[in-house]
Amino acid sequence: MGDESLRQVHFERTQNSKYLVHNRRGGTLPVGSGGPDDTDFTPVELLLAAIGACSAIDVDVVTSRRAEPTEFRAVVSGDKIRDTEQGNRLENLKVEFTITFPEGEDGDKAREALPRAVKMSHDRLCTVSRTVELGTPVALDLNDGELTVSSGDRPADPSSD
Image (cartoon, rainbow, N blue to C red; front, side):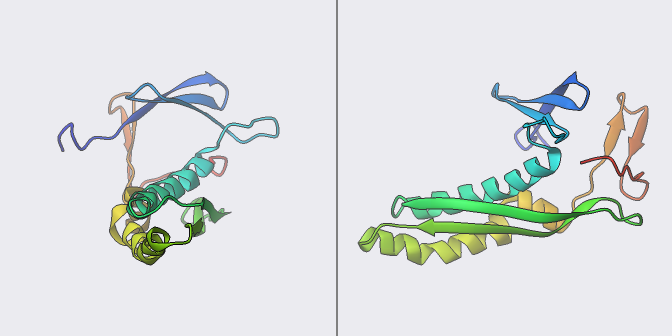
C-alpha cells in the first residue's frame, strides 16, 4: 500500500503505564492504564471513542448538509470480558445516538436522511467499526522484526486493557 493509504500514530512512554500518542499533524493524546488516580483515556476507552467518533463524523457530514443539529450526542458501550481461550476482548459493542434537528423544512430533510446516514456509516463508511466487525488481524513487531507475533500465535496477557 502506498503512503496515501497509510495511517499511523506513534507514542512515547512518559512513565510506567502512561504514554503520549502523537499523530502526523502534531496532535497529542495522553493514554494511561485507568488506575484510580489516572484520568487519561485507556486503550479500551479509545477504541470505544474511535468507533463512536467515526460513526458520528459520517452521520454529521451527511445530515448537517441539510440542517445543523440542535442536539448531537452518542454513548458507546461494550462489555469487557476475560476469556482464557480467546483472550480479553469487548463484546456487545453499541453506539447509541441522540440527534435532533430544528423544526422546519431543513430539519425535516435532515431527519429523513438520518436513518440512511446511520446505516451507511455502519455498513460501509466507518473504517473503525468496519475493521472491528471484519476482524482484521493485528501483527506485533519487536525491534524491527526480532520477534513478530500475529494471528494464531497470540499470547494472552490478562493485565492488558
